[in-house]
Image (cartoon, rainbow, N blue to C red):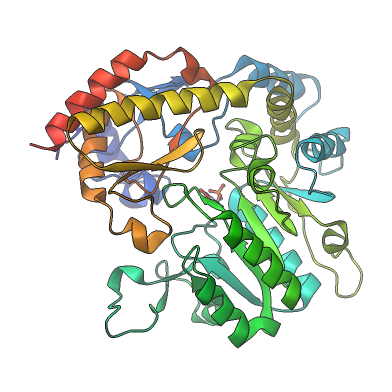
Length: 439
Ligand code: PLP
């Protein structure tokens, strides 16, 4: 495999090992001693690393960048807010309702909302509210999904070590150490698009299930999408059993459509989480949905607790206001979709040239690339794709100036600033990268 080792990054990583586990501030940024990237600056659709190599970036910080890095339309509003008003006071501001109104105008399923600082926190808020409303604890998640670093959501089906010949179902295991065993009993996990599995869980546990938490388009599993019928099934089964349908739109919200996946499917969640694209890179998140469910957040006996020192801080909300206003009032998302479709055509030409069977999954603004002859329907299908070839291809792209996550479970993210990129250059680089990957 091509290694992307560079002098400045290598020495920064060596130094950082003295200060931080793995030498990084977030474990997912550690790509090994030879490949860990240190970034100096970003602008538009590009990032420059510490060795001054410039990359066209399709990773976009795992999705938040929707307009482009350092977009003036957002940054100027944030700077103005900081210099003229401040950052936090621990009190409410006019921005709170202004941003919720903007979100409600884009996402009609939202009746009431609360803010958070990260996707993880939004999921914590939504799950707690669902539990408070239903008086139940169990949460059903989907294999291959990810809902942030919240202990209660950090259990998964061990499909990777599952022997389908001898075991009926994969074991449910924690993401890692430090997750209390006591949180296991609250979680069930099912394969996406599997009707029998969801029927089985509700037949066994229906009256104990507080919520299904799902990314209908799996931003953490190559943009594999739930079918329309499957989403309707989830809506119906939740209604039959009094459970909440929580759509985790941390990656899809304000990206796949102005109204997120719920606009695409026309199916209403009881609660929804948002983060990433809503702030074009500023840390802001929110959760909300049905008014009667959200009103469970209160000081009454039996009320749900929610808050936080930095919640709805003015940096976050001025960024959200500016970003959402641009997304609402301009054709940014249409531009993003067009660029995403063009890029898939470029990649398709390259893969065809080398005789590589491939399928794209998900919407043009965040599409997955899968080497195989069928669009995967869930994580189990994804495991049958040639993800090793993808990783080799991705590292060769990176070595040649195209940044992306070298794991095909992470989609290609497109931002508005990609509209000016040179598709011929991308095709040349992709040709070279695939040629090297097949050697
Ligand atoms: N939910 C989904 C669907 C995500 O993709 C992520 C992060 O990638 C999270 C929640 C957690 O968000 P954060 O990293 O902002 O805590």
